[in-house]
Amino acid sequence: MKKLLVVLIATAFVFGLVAQSAIAEDRLELSGQVRARAWSKENTDSYGTGLMAGDLEAASAGLEQTDADELKYWDQRFRMAAKITPADGVSGNLRFDFAEGTWGNTPDWDGSRYTTSELQVDRAYLEVNKGIVMVRAGQQFFGLGNNYAYDNQATGLLFQIKTPVVISLVYTKEDEGGGLTDDDDLGTEDVDHYAIDLGYATDAFSVNVFYGVQKDGSDGTPADPCVEPNMFGAMGKASFGPINVLAELNVFGGEIDYGPGTESTDFTGTQLYADVNMRVNEMFLVGVDLVYSDGVDIEDDLGDEIKITQLNATNSFGSTRYADRGPFTTDIHLLDANFAGTGSSVLDAYTGGDIFDPLGLQGGAMGGGPYVVVTPIEGLNFYANFMYLKAAEDELIDNTTVYNLAAEYMLTQNTTLAAQYSVASVDDDIEGFDIDDLKALVARIQITF
Image (cartoon, rainbow, N blue to C red; front, side, top):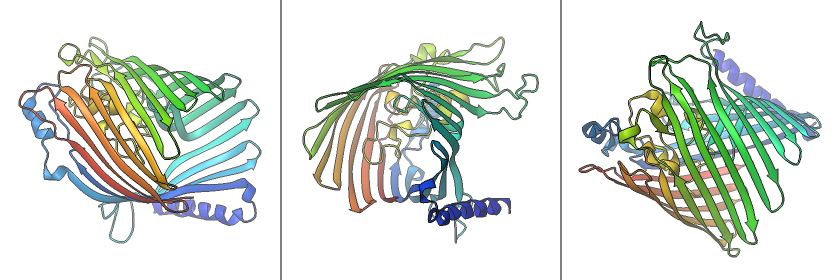
């Protein structure tokens, strides 16, 4: 009954805004998208529960391709955003996701309608933007750099001062710790994020330098450790005639503290990404991705160190991915599968990381590859790319090769049809052990408004 009331209130509110827009269109902006997708996946949900622990028998059972891991399904989503501007520079912002789920899937589908996934409040925040100061408060998106190393949708505050060097301060409340007291004696310590970004931009280039940290107020125990990663990063964008360059460097630190009398686990990781591209003519865009990401020697350092690729790995929004280049680049997440299987829920939450640590096996990566976007006629794009990633620490994986082929066509105004085929082939260094290719084939029809 309570859920039905929430849905009725939200629906009445949205449609009330639509009705009012006829009278006050200057105060309301509506936008969104509606999509349906068809998926076919192979080997993308496998987990090697004993691989990093050296238990090849358990790992083989987890990684072996089975019929249950050949996934074929449809899903859909109706997304609507509303921005209400009651005064100049002041706005309230909402974003809803309606009926997001898999077709025919229990318990989402009861035979006649969506139930558990009928309504999600994606974002809800206020913004005051006056002069050189901008403040946002509420449930919103927070990102640093190219929105990979820190990519978070959370409740919190963004405070920005727009001088020639734009200063952005971020605070998010990640976890109230089971109570509002925030008291160590009661075991209700909070988990918070703090970040700062300094940005400078001209017409020719932009530079951002940023720092982020997670603060966990708990003393730490083996069952409930104190997890405090941190990250320093820098990103630059520049144009040199027809050539565009994006580069980002991230360095991670911090630790997992399991309490007095126990050894802590240090977070580590250095990763560099660069994208260099050029518009040859109206038909061809060509470019190259370059990657360096260090690894961890798991024979000597597993348990003492763990490589991470994102500050907020446990709550990543997934708005930037590099391996699945094309119209589905934030959807497929081909290399994000966690095959580490350390046996620790905390450690496993931080393993995995797209091109920077394929399959979460702590090997890192170095390499890259070319890509091309072809536009033979207006409204039709073809995408192709290839990446070869050699492990920096190759005890488990020697190299990973990624292929993507895709097409997107504008059927009519604000309506697109797209398809993509992605494959990741893994060459491991373990005698008598093979990781099957990860494959994904997806098609989508989508309207935007």
